[in-house]
Length: 165
Image 1 (cartoon, rainbow, N blue to C red):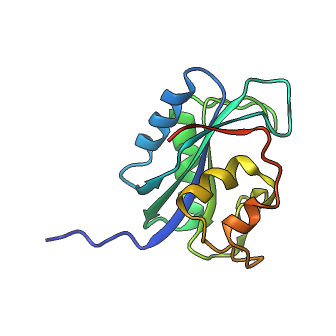
Image 2 (tube, rainbow, N blue to C red):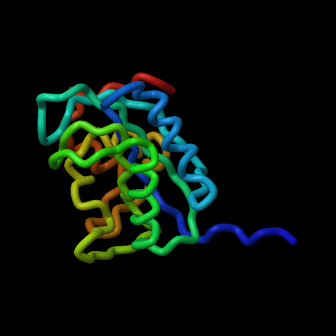
């Protein structure tokens, strides 16, 4: 009997700035299976740190995926993945082995103490918008009605550099 297809389309931002950064991204993508099925993977971008500058540069990418997990269960799963991959607590916007951010979940607008969807910082973050524009330029932000391509045109990109196709 064929397994039913996962029903929710999600976008996850991946970031890393410690250790072997490319290997960290690959490990993070593998860690998502089988609860998250990746459909598309963006190119990798190297970016300057955001929020706290005195740390190594980041590698960032975005994946489009499907899941059957509900939003809060998905967040818990992503946090478990981060810990399994070596993330240890630091300070806000500090260096990290791996960071998995739930950016969008279908066209859901959701807010709780632990989770906000869409991710609240996405409209200001070129390091998320640039890779997402490579895989979903016409995706519409459910709160402001703008496409990812439109949002990307509104942010500074001088320190966001594509390094891998």
